[in-house]
Image (cartoon, rainbow, N blue to C red; front, side, top):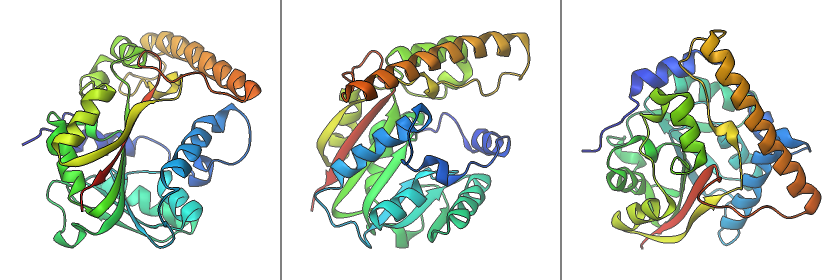
Amino acid sequence: MSMDKAGKEFWDASWAAKRLPDAVEALPHGGGGADYVQRRFDRFFHQIFSGIETEHAKLLEIGCARSLWLPYFAREFGFEVAGIDYSETGCEQEREILARAEVEGEIHCADFFQPPSHLLSSFDVVVSFGVAEHFTNTTECIKAFSGFLKPNGLMLTSIPNLKGLPGRLVKALNRPVYDIHVPLDAEALAQAHRQAGLTVIACDNFMSSNFGVCNLDGIPTRSAEWLAKKSVLALLVRLSRLAWFVEERRGEEFKANPLTSPYINCVARKQG
């Protein structure tokens, strides 16, 4: 059985300590660097969903606590959205996010390894953002994800690139957070999907830079350590924003690469 390196208590405490975000802020509209990551993901989603009928198709987000994406998927593509997460706190926050966005969606508070049986083989699309890398056996985790898919269903798994500079930065600035992850590269993530019985369509690094994926969660705020590390992180985030500005002015993104890219995205299909 795959072990969860973070654990429910970690997520409950983490979600309870943070202000509830506004789903509208995550939608890829408007200009400026603050929305750049969402706009890049928006283009990516439009690419991978271009070949399927999304109106009234069923989409499940695994690890949906506080997700800003479920309202987006419903509004932008017409998906009927649902989510599953084992954190009661995170689930309640997600229900509030959906309500504020005036989007209907079912949120299931359950362990995805032991889900309600009616959810299995029920979804056209399954997505997850920053979930799979918390489990010691990636293949078992992906296999559990695929159990929610209908035959020929599509899966998107997005994880942080902890094998590159973003991971090294997390390790240096916040070792406890680094230790609840399993660092994976694109090939390891793709292999886990194949071993889980899925057909990999694409698996690669995504975006050239975003040091904002690093965080200082767990370090006492306003402590000398926090202030010093916050200053370092703020400088690196500014460098990412400068790269985004240049990309937008050029009308062309810098190449995603294993060293500096913040994310790895894997798109796979369940065999019919």
